[in-house]
Amino acid sequence: MADTVAVAADHGGYDLKCALLPELRALGFGVLDLGTDSRESVDYPDFAEAVARAMEEGRARWGLLACGTGIGMSMAANRHRGLRAALVHDGLTARLARQHNDANVLVLGGRILGPELAKECIKVFFSTPFEGGRHARRVAKFSPVKANV
Ligand code: RB5
Image (cartoon, rainbow, N blue to C red; front, side):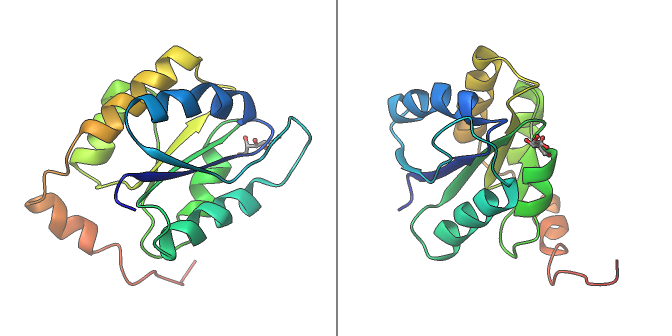
């Protein structure tokens, strides 16, 4: 479980997902591919939900989501308690999402990033530890989920 990444995309992230699955396997991760399986239009929250369920049930420790921009997937994933989804654009945001935010879901924009930059994001994200300390205090303040907006 510890080394499994649950991966899902909508049609906007499908091509990027296809490009990234071999990269994840090459890095030594188990991959749980939860779709989508074509460029046909689908609803991204359904796929964020599938990854969240896999993580909540302990079938995967990590998540990787892609949609067109990454924005919708981030919003949907962060509705789930225990998921910390970070929309990442480059190596710097990938590193800081882990070091400072203890992100456990990497979100990428399939219409924003090319595959090589996305591969760099994956390598950095999954090899960078959480720094803890003051960041742990801040991350702890994410819960309970606030319902006033
Ligand atoms: C789908 O057209 C698009 O809205 C979706 O992939 C994503 O970018 C949403 O945030």
